[in-house]
Image (cartoon, rainbow, N blue to C red; front, side, top):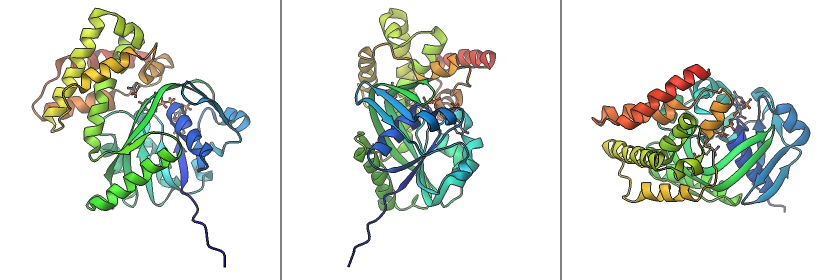
Length: 320
Ligand SMILES: NC(=O)C1=CN([C@@H]2O[C@H](COP(=O)(O)OP(=O)(O)OC[C@H]3O[C@@H](n4cnc5c(N)ncnc54)[C@H](OP(=O)(O)O)[C@@H]3O)[C@@H](O)[C@H]2O)C=CC1
Ligand SMILES: CC(C)(CO)C(=O)C(=O)O
């Protein structure tokens, strides 16, 4: 008698840019059945595959790639990893629903706060929605080419779905997701509170993403100047304050740890800088407006962050 072998989960990458390309390639190379949805880079990736130039893993290539220009051609996927920018999330909901297998898990591998809340009502109730915080430095240097400068960890948290009121099931789903990343050699852990995890990530993104655009400076330049260092520390302190007002205590020393970590990041340009350079809309709603509104609703004003948001809104409108 032959025993049936359980097929592994089918994974869909919705938006194969720096994040989608990196994690999708790593999962595919680990043996998972990964399907990639692309837009402008479809032809290049179909022809030449995905190329990862990683300071951590070396040069890796995936060819052929199960690439699609049209979601309708993709097979139903059990896990959907969303690697697009948050600015297009609501418009993307029908695409996500179309590719999702019944009971699929949708993971937003994106920065910002409240992004799952905004998407939830546009997705079928049967889908589980999770958030993933990527502690990584990657960018695209050409069609289908991803440069990986440092790190890679993914923190996952459950947002909503049929497991909302079942803590054990919720935990099992998040653990399963973290397990997929770990099988691909990527550090990953389940987070008990997604909002808390998102506030932690903002401690870094609020100062560095915005200041890189406003001052036209990378991390090394920002960390080399007395005034920008003060500004970064002030902004980090405000994010910690905002998180606290919203009921999320960030440990003393966390902001300092993020600051010190950045001293070791050489010439890193945050993803918002790349968006500005390519005249794409900036993720201002998710990274600034949402946290500012949440803090204000809790009675907490964050004046530095508000000023940075206003300046970036001006730049974003002129750049569009
Ligand atoms: N880069 C980084 O180091 C980090 C990024 N993040 C977050 O990850 C998210 C993704 O960022 P990143 O990977 O840098 O962004 P990229 O711009 O590199 O990738 C976004 C990708 O999504 C594609 N896309 C957008 N809309 C669609 C669509 N409708 N159909 C198919 N494909 C689509 C884009 O295609 P096209 O080329 O045609 O526009 C592009 O390939 C953001 O929220 C960012 O803040 C978080 C941590 C670190
Ligand atoms: C903080 C950093 C650089 C790595 O943790 C990052 O994740 C980002 O650019 O969003």
